[in-house]
Length: 352
Image 1 (tube, rainbow, N blue to C red):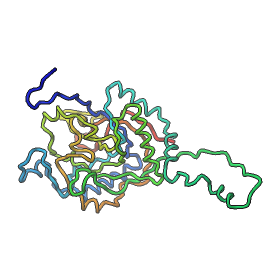
Image 2: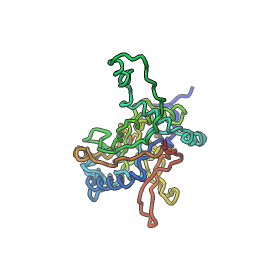
Image 3: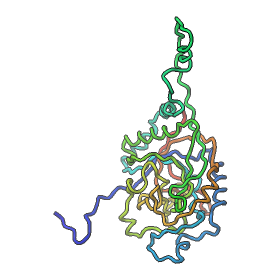
Image 4: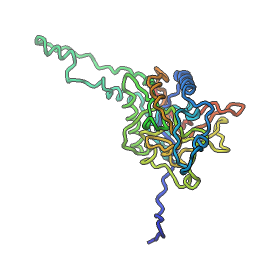
């Protein structure tokens, strides 16, 4: 039996990195102009003017380790997520090349119309309050009839698209010290949530999603301070040793958009600057309810100001997508970053 000297522990099995995620993209032809105007208005209202880097913010009086927290009253401009990156994550994936080939085939085989119909049946307002219909109840109370009316044949109504509003602002942590602010989608039909649960279960049962038994939390991240310029990163040794732990970092049910760390030479498709996959270090440092980003904000006033803010209205969700971890920074001809998006390796249109 192998012995380990001193306090050294036996090396644990290395967990594979997170590679992809399942989501509902929130950027559509209808939502994009609304979201662009809303995000710009939000950034102008809350961003710290002439914002220093995280290192500069935390330098004065700094005496602790590199993981020391810094709390500021405003939002660093680069902590506000770009419009193209807005989505609702349904689960995260850790896929080999072979498994990815199988995963990208699943969306094309989905019967979206049937899933939507089932979601409509599960919506609270569509659950029967009694075993009798209104007409049947009236007959029970009225005079007896020797002839029972013939019921018309059941006709399945066409399934309407999922239409959401994105309003308000909430914090993933206590407002006085948080690193993530988000808006939760809502829909009058109350079908979005059961629809997402059905998708999550389907992909989990097929072995594509990292299993997680926590409750699904649909949200679109608007602010995440891990993206702030100059944020402190873990030492290189930690980068090599740490891998995402779904039980401790970002659960499939509460996943934020993947960590985006720009490589020095990476260039993505179409001239886009490719961000390094978030699975290269422990994502608990900046994502989910257990996030440990070094830069925190006191969002108390911001949450009050934007509690009823409208980001987008009457947005028909148009697709289900599997995206790569790590976003692409889109640059123009001059090399200036003009946007950021995730690469969709597979998607299916949500046309009923």
